[in-house]
Length: 311
Ligand SMILES: [Cu+2]
Image (cartoon, rainbow, N blue to C red; front, side, top):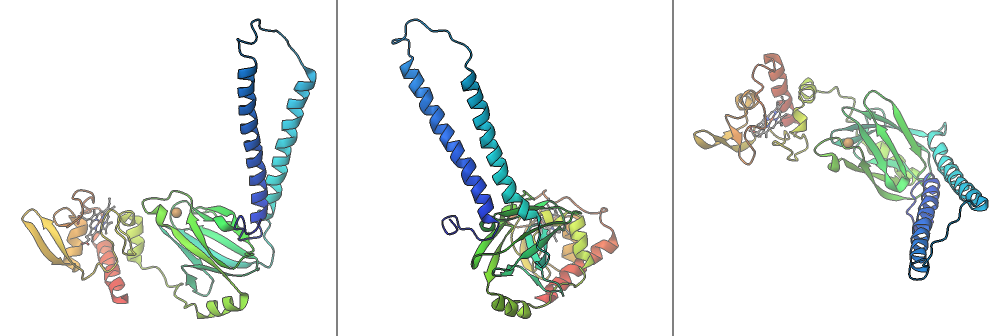
């Protein structure tokens, strides 16, 4: 069972049991009812039975078709409940990892500023994931572990599991969360606990740095729904490496080469459609002139500068 169904966690068996039972019942009735229908169609056709028969009432039959389905749904309930109940009972000594979902990436925070892009966990150890969202609704889904929980802003959700198989498994976001939702994927890596200790010790502490206020402004002005920070093109060009980047823009007077300096970035925010980056559509980005204060513009430009200095 474990290998046939690729069960990666202690909770997978309970989920599979309920699933296989319900699925088998569904197959049984689909095949059975279809066969019975065909049989009745042929056997009671008008050719063979010229005069229809009338009959009514059959207590045995009625009891049978009430009691049998009742037993079946009660078994379904029992299997469903016994698979689900342990998912909400977290062992007290579980290792805790904070998971932050945001458009469109996952961060796994091991404390002390150690943040990883991959969820790495020790083999056969109970792990509790504390789920937080930095923006909209997401959902953390690890199919091989049969665990899935919503990640909701302002609500502290959690899930737990004990990995029973070493290796690398997929993590998905399974709540539609905007343009690059389908790219919101990560991996969970299960390794020996010694190996895990080494990995954690080597993980550089990069977190706990306060967020740049310019980044906060990009988020609150929804700039990041159209511009990525990681180099991928969404609706507009990526902000990665923006400051100092050379590109071609289309203006009313034709094409020209620009270097994204402070003045250009300001113009691009205040009047984006005067100089349109080649390959992108005019009119998608609304002019922010008058909508963003002078001070905020400075902060945003400063963020782009500081990002550039990091590379
Ligand atoms: Cu998501």
